[in-house]
Length: 94
Image 1: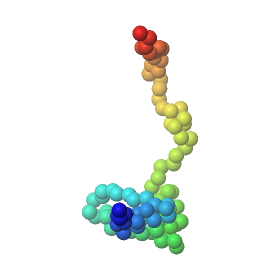
Image 2: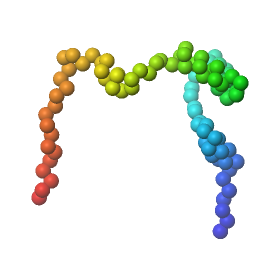
Image 3: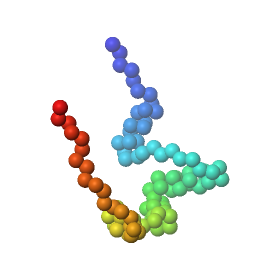
Image 4: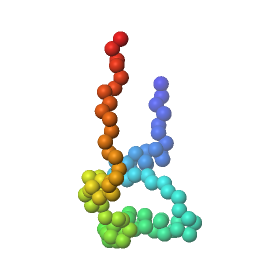
């Protein structure tokens, strides 16, 4: 039996994955397409990547403070009944 060799595209994608890259697909308005491409190019450029990443994090991303526990702690839960009756399951003996 002969082995079927993977396509060059498959090999390229595997190689990129080993290098730490992921494939991202998104849809943007036509007038924003070149902007998104330029941002992606800036993130791939070794000379501009750290500055670009810093600007994007500072200007676009919302700060993540404390994770899930902090989020739940800050949620307005007054007046919400969080108790539920104890469920012992169903009888499985025959």
